[in-house]
Amino acid sequence: MGTSIEFARPDGGKTEGYLAMAGQGRPGIVVIQEWWGLNDQICGVADRFARAGYNALAPDLYKGRVTSEPDEANHLMTGLDFPGATHQDLRGAVTHLKTQGDKVAVMGFCMGGALTIASAVHIPEIAAAVCFYGIPSQDFADPTKIRAPFQGHFANTDDWCTPAKVDELEAALKGAGVKHELYRYNAAHAFFNERSAAYDVASANLAWERMAKFLKATH
Image 1 (cartoon, rainbow, N blue to C red):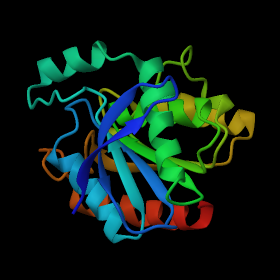
Image 2: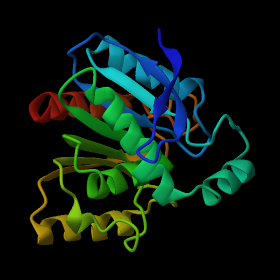
Image 3: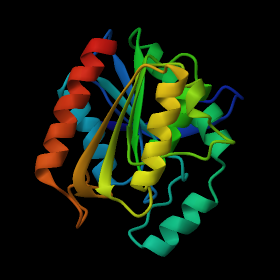
Image 4: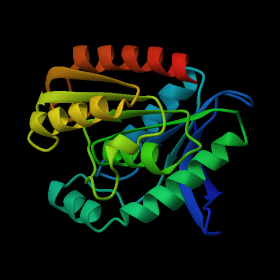
């Protein structure tokens, strides 16, 4: 359904991405990859958003690199310039989508979930943010500084984005009065990814329904 495009970064550079269009004037959403890279599964999420009426853009944060090996994925994620990805690639994606429609949300999974929170802190143009099982370091993106309506989806048996970290996030959001919804699922990390061994169809479907309702209400 979608196509590969190149879009402008604020610094004048270019980033490639996968764009699935619903039509001019439709709301936009930036879909942020997991640590595997911009693979077919993430492009499929963008396609799903397009079918739901959103112009969806998934930036290629790894510049063409994709893996299915956890060790290599960890290496790629560790080597990613998170500030650059946030302030340049993701903000550029938001700006590009705003040429197609007025409001743009950001969402992502795992590493992309952490970058979703970072976007909600650092990119003032976004209308809403939906995070799946990812939390950035507080020194990079303090969740009390989130500027947009926020929804989070987390797994109760997650050894990376642990329930304890989610407790801390929830306490911070409540303490700062950030407008948010936070949901927990009796599932494992990556429960939304249909290609993962952790895929949980009931949790994934419920999360999609909650996200769809949230996005409709916020943008």
